[in-house]
Amino acid sequence: MEVLLRECANYVALAAELCSVLCIAVGMVETLVQGARVTVGRSGSSRQARRDLWAQFARWIVLALEFALAADIVRTAIAPTWDDIGRLAAIAFIRTGLNYFLERDMEEFAPAAEGPEEGRVKDERPRS
Image 1 (cartoon, rainbow, N blue to C red):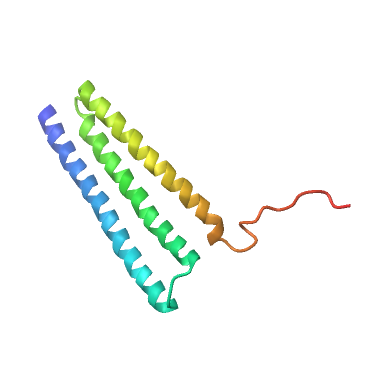
Image 2: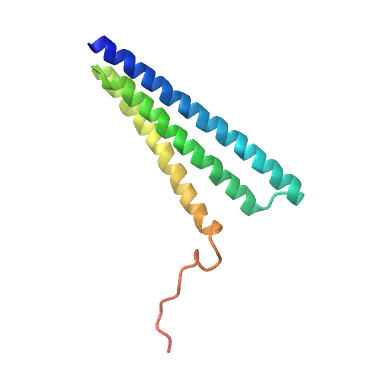
């Protein structure tokens, strides 16, 4: 029974890894096409357009990291050894760190993408 579960887990992990690769490929193509449009359409890209392209690609990378971590978890789920658990912990730590910093950078860029009033901090001092 364990052999059957392990085989099934390997197929699920392989599918998750395939999704991870596809996310990166789709994000790369989408970003390259949009980058070409920005460059050709505006005869040079503005800073905001580059930020938007980066944020768009970063979303795809974050999704790919989630799929890759899921694949590692599935592979380790069936009768793991302590070595497997340690390896998974290290991989999860690294990928979670990458994911955290990518999402933090994306949040930093979010106010620049909002309207002029939405990203601004309001002055709440009493007026005299």
